[in-house]
Amino acid sequence: MDSEESLKAITASGIVAGMRGAFPPEVALRVSDVLMNEGITVFEMMMNSAQPIAAMQAVKAEYGAEACVGMGTVLDAETAITVMDAGADFVVSPAFQPDVVEAVMERGILMGPGVATPSEAVAAWETGVPLLKLFPVGALGIDYFDAVFGPLSHMSFMCNGAMNDQNARAFLQAGAVACGMGGWLVGDGTWSKSRLRSRARILVNAVQSARSGMEALTIDS
Image 1: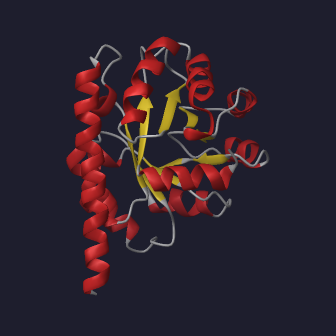
Image 2: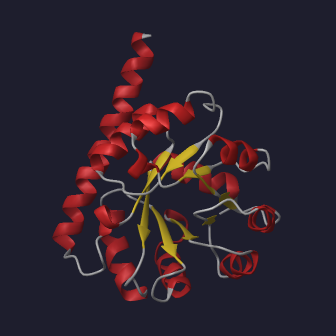
């Protein structure tokens, strides 16, 4: 997928399922199978995990264009090039590093640099990226997001860090285009399919509820 296609997939989903830790290919496939069946189609593997590139490739090979599969925790340009060569649909970092952004954007792949402050957000947005990862905003809370988003509402934010169904709904209602979900959604790689399915359904309902609320506000206004 190119940058525009990946951004559309992330925005449409509202959820990016992140797998950090013990998610080698066989586990990533088991988890993604459950989530795909529940309507979650965007997956972020993490470089500080078990066999992340192989896991990314396995999920992409299984679902092709039906899934958007990228790599997170990319901390340098060399790694960015490696994961793009391996087929990453998007690249995400917890920080804003101009050399990583440049390397990814040169290839026409979606880059989501991590920002935590308005100054970082403005500096990153000026590079031309179409998506910012606000991290770790879950721990900072919805009031912090509201304060940042108010003057920067022309920017697109994916909210990450300490996310659950309740704050994901709040961030989406407040203007985030998506939320990155890790442990709350997929656990540590040992969860049963039934537990994964239950969490996925709760989260999908939360996203639908948030977006229905936004539509109602738009109509009322």
